[in-house]
Amino acid sequence: MCLPGDSTEPPGPADAAASPDPAGLRGALLESRQRWRDFAILGADLFFETDAEGRFTFLAPEAPLGWTMETLLGHPGRELLAAPEPDPFLLRTKTRDLCAWLRRADGEHACLSFTLAPLADAGGRFAGLRGCARDTTAAMARAARQAAALRRAEALQDLVGRIRREVLAPKMLTATLEALQVALGCTGTAVLEWSAEEQIMAISERGTSPARLLPLAASLAGLAEPAFLTGPGGEMVALLPQPPETPPHHALLAWRAAGQRPFDADDRHMLVALSDLLCVILGNQALQQRLERQAHTDALTGLLNRRAFLEDLGRHLRRQAMDPERAGRAEGALLFLDLDNFKPINDRQGHEAGDAALVAVAGLLRETIRPADLAARFGGDEFALWLEGADASVAAARAEALCGATAGLAGTLPKDTPQLSFSIGCAIRRTDLAESPEALLARADAAMYAAKRGGRNHWVLAAEPDPSQRLAS
Image 1 (cartoon, rainbow, N blue to C red):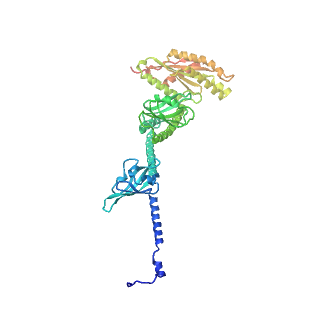
Image 2: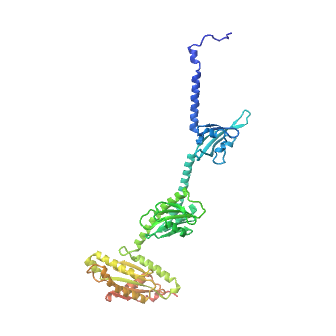
Image 3: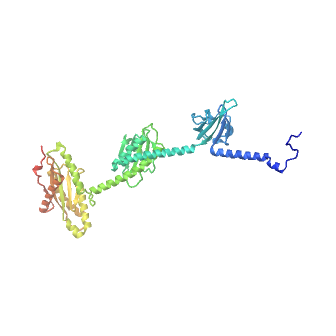
């Protein structure tokens, strides 16, 4: 029986075009499914489902985290955990961005960020989880490196800020060691110096004494790269040498007591950075020392110059004035020397010969003085000596010896050089007289001119100072 609207005629061409092709439809669905699968895999590294007991029932893609499907399917997800918590496979609620560490098949660990949704059975009971996860291990490592770099930068900025508040290199050196000790929790820090004879000493230190570690450091003389090692008592030791330029050589030494943690990568980075800063500070210190030497010494002879001599003499006299046990005793003599026959050397033989004569005289004066004494070239052919603790008899003997020693200069000077001699004025210092270095020098200068007038190659003892300068009792 045919119902209204039914037709027994076969479908025409128009009807055939309107009818779907089952094979084409199936192909389109498969293509769409593959497309969505590709999209999903691009967005995540792991897809899974578990049953109510947390066992894997589905996994994608192939070999997740390097494991085979046979190894994982049917096994609890918690067996992959590198740490017991957090456990994403125990959750019963929707969750996003939960990070957990899982084990890879190669033994390494991977950090995965999970998105989870619970599954329910027909009765609404919990039936498992469906989820995906992204491998964030590389991103976590980058973030950790960036955070560590930021911490190091902030710490170094703070340390450099403390150091920059100091102006003089020795104080900058101390500030560097103090800041390093606090920042790294070191038991002690020090700057070591090797002399040209390879003798080692600590020129600056903070915390406990480095004496016990010096033999270890000495055994590493010539080291070119930082060394991190264990000390003789189990200390954690870091030794960072400075670039090997001209002696003396230097190194930064830092250590932690036995039982404390070793220096990690962040610690080592900071040590290297501060070692570089230390190199700059030591360079500045060497420059300051050179400038100080230039400011205090005569360029030709290497003796003190006038200003440095008077400054040092002032310090000597102030120390004497503050010592009551030395009051009333002769406590030093100032000898002012003028070189006789020096002008003819310059006029006849030139300034090179004159300079050679001045250098020879400076050598003679160095041989005359003791470590506590002072020697200076005031300019031209004038020299000064301070004889610490000398009285009139000692000063006279020294002046007489100098007058006699000038004969020995002939062998160090060019041939036909006129015979050099000294005219010397001696002024004796007494601690009960408030006499300044300048006043003492004026008395010695006047005595020197008296010696010149007396025939040269001679010495004269200066008169006592004005009694009005006597200190109040």
